[in-house]
Length: 120
Image 1 (cartoon, rainbow, N blue to C red):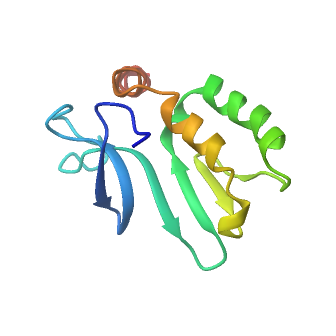
Image 2 (tube, helix red, strand yellow):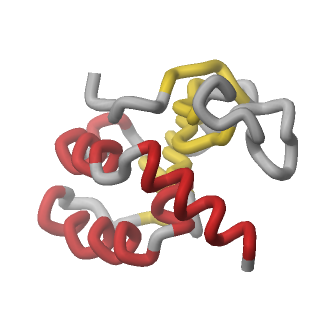
């Protein structure tokens, strides 16, 4: 598994997700405290596969790294929102790059960033 220690797979928001479990971060997600802190979700939408990565949304250095690396590893144009990366077909997904993205942030770093942004 490529997921850093501290994250776990769960079915959340009606999709497969990777979260910081409440056993590690009891406060949960500030918008819905009864839920664990979301990190990544994968969804099959009507016209695309969506990868929602909160680290890209919260960490400009991770966002910039990803945007810079994407054209090196994919022939397709990057289709991206604030936290959402969209792929038209499974064959379009640069799996090695996504693996690097997932491994780029530790659970501790993610929690610290999340808490620092909540205070702002």
